[in-house]
Image (cartoon, helix red, strand yellow):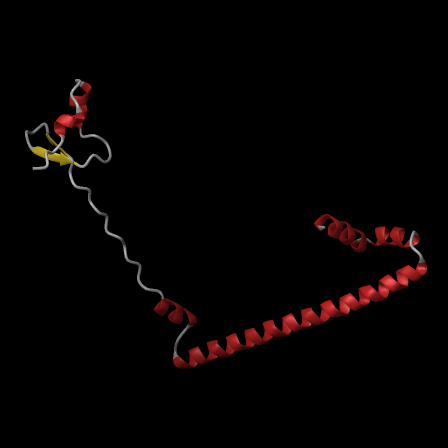
Length: 139
């Protein structure tokens, strides 16, 4: 259906195509089509004028509201900013440590198992040890 509308739109929008089409049509049919097209155009004009009137009324009301705000010493931005709640940053939840290891300085450290493996754990894994050896036992 959309293709048909595009074809009609193309023919009606081009004077040369419209003349060629009119030459092939019966004159009575052209007059009947003309009266129908005029009726449709009048309906559409009425709808368009009504839409424009609504837009103008809305704009007028908007301007009145802005003027009232100005009398109160406010701007439209003041109203909008009052509505918006300040953004609350969510706190990152830290994971509970799963592994314990001893670093190069001999200090015991923990690792939750997220992100890159600590160097001492990676070195032990490279030597063939298991990650399970570093698990923190739940007592």
